[in-house]
Image 1: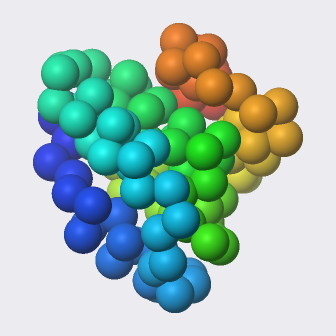
Image 2 (image 1 turned 60 degrees about the vertical axis):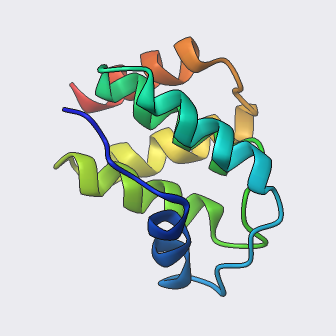
Amino acid sequence: MCMKMTMKDIVSINKEYDEGIVINEGSMLFALESIKKSQDWTEQVSYLVRALLVDHVFKDGNKRTATHLIVSMLEFHPENIQKLVIGVSKDNVSDIKEIKKRITLEIY
């Protein structure tokens, strides 16, 4: 599964929860460029999750936006996704391999 996301798509998702005010555009642009280079959906999601939860792309609503992205990609139990989002954010995990590992552990 390959993600086809744009900055406009991500801002639109954030606007469902907040104002869509981008405060770290560079991080999101890096994540969007990085997902184009991978065919691994967990790696793609990991780049976006890191941009949202560690680099805080938006003024507010980053955790909700990350949760929305994960839910839209997969169908899981919401409590597992919440645990994943809070864990990555709380632990300030920036390593893509670690985020990918956590996604895989929580999802399967």
